[in-house]
Image 1 (tube, one colour):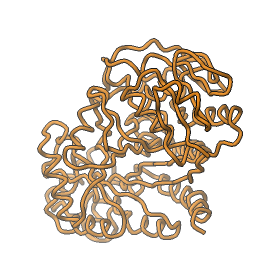
Image 2 (tube, rainbow, N blue to C red):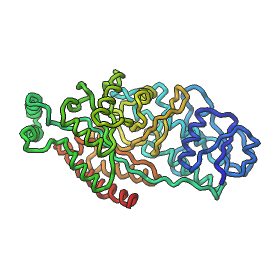
Image 3 (cartoon, helix red, strand yellow):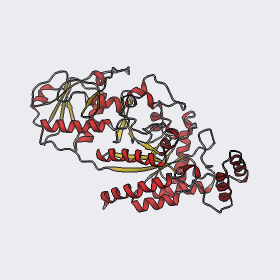
Image 4 (tube, helix red, strand yellow):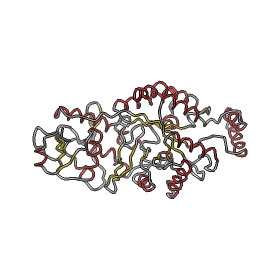
Length: 444
């Protein structure tokens, strides 16, 4: 069967980018683009007319919105409406009641984050000011829902059309901000810590610290062997992102990069699984540190470091992604919010980043996450039970749309610190009752 052909009155970098994304999501072969109306009309295979006027009933027609043919970044007039029980915008006419190309481009590129916007306490884009939050679709991978709508509409016009059948993927990822709470910190630091806990009335915490430094108990953040056993049981290969700041800062409190046990831990996981960089907060201000941290991690792990996730999800467009590309990062896992769970780019598929200021697609792959334990605990103040329900909702919707379910976990929350009681059990339930069975179905 001939490949899909798309007609447009004029080409643009924006249009080519989003057509490439949609073609990759839906078909085994890319969608071809032409500005030759005669060639389009003679095409014997499926065809989409993306222009200001239709030609015939035999084509699939989407009247274009001007967004993909603009060369500046401006505030867009967006009015959302209901379509098949979810939201849509950029209403037009044709075989779809909205411009799926322009709307998807707007969401994937994070267009609104290039516009003037208020920032949160960490200097990040505030999720409460996003279109997805305001229009109540932050909890949905809206682009994937639209692609399902498009598939159904295309089949009505071209019943013989064949689509890709992607496999659902569950990718577990861990941010190691501090591998050990008390071990390897020295007597002076630990003594001061015990005194500080006692003055705050945290007797259990002080007692645990005392037992750890006397080697009577495992460090509360050291849940690595437990995690290894879970991964082995469930037959999964997670990703680990290590914070390796050389100097401590307000937000960078990782264990010293000079201690051998920390280096050994990194070397072990680089051999076992995929390891990546968790760029320090300081590297967001001093850009030379990003290269230094990456090179240090490569030496310790004896592996090329090509993946990353921003510490505290400190993501600023387009600067952060440009810096990552400059040092050789190929895949980034920061696309999500650091103050609430949900789909920041309204998608549960990986995609290439488009630099909106330069009007150019890039080689950087974006892997969006939709659930982070720290959001549930610190920001949303959820109990382990409520967080489990939220986790399962996101897991189910991504599985339904055969996307990539990426969750973020922290060893301190999954450890044995009394402040995180119940979270370890919640995670074990998720792994054994859900992840295990999907891993079995995928690989059995």
